[in-house]
Amino acid sequence: MSGLTIKIGNTPIVKDSSFFIRKGKITALIGESGSGKSMTVAAILRLLPPAARVEGTILFEGKNLLEASHTEIVELRRRRVFTIFQDASSSFKLAIRMARQLYAFSAGRINDNNIQFKKKMGRIMNDLRLPHDVLNQYPHELSGGMLQRCMIACALYVEPDLLIADEPTSALDMEVREDFLKELRVLNEKHGTTVLLITHDLDIVANAANDMVVMHKGKVVETGIVSEVLERPEDSYTKRLLNSRF
Ligand SMILES: Nc1ncnc2c1ncn2[C@@H]1O[C@H](COP(=O)(O)OP(=O)(O)OP(=O)(O)O)[C@@H](O)[C@H]1O
Image (cartoon, rainbow, N blue to C red):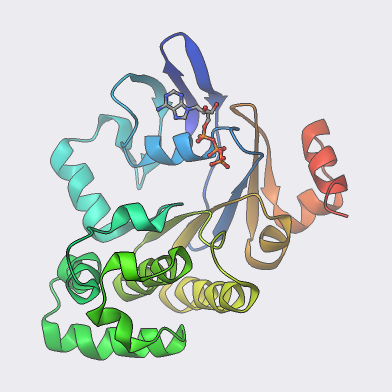
């Protein structure tokens, strides 16, 4: 991503920001609330609000996503890039049972049939310690954390090239958070999925990510390998952020 600028009206939301996501690695995008992380993700997915004006380049395997056709973007979102949004409940329709919705988010995207879905999803649900009863339930009967885990299960099912996870663990308790990070590593190591993990939890960055990108007030202020940035931060905001960890 290079020179990304997003404005809504005259207000700059993201300012001339650049970073690189290494293929097959886990990159954490970190920054305080309102720093522009979700808007950056929206730009990658071409889901910015209509009023937003965007400049710059977002290259995905050589293609500038900001210039890709609608068909190319739809195909990309369907098969190659899986996104777990911050508020999982908004991803589900109220009046449809979870089994159908999970099928659509996972097997349906990669043209697996119902038998394949039941077998593979069953295994993933076991790994995530997700009770199989959820398949017969409606979204409103489940907690935010449970819905989040359902989205995680779908991501694991699809095995996308790129997984974008926006604060995926914020609604999860400690034990489930650990399970999620474990599964994320499996997806990354076994299937080579590149991960962009949006978080403001430095412990998750330290434990799960290879690379990190720090955003502050709409600008990327530091990028690098996690161990190096944690040991020798260069930007003053990154230094403050690291000091606040203890
Ligand atoms: N639809 C919108 N119209 C105008 N401004 C917006 C819109 N959505 C977000 N913003 C503003 O853009 C800025 C960046 O928001 P963004 O959601 O990207 O931050 P964030 O870093 O993801 O924060 P959080 O960690 O709280 O999710 C904020 O100042 C926010 O108020």
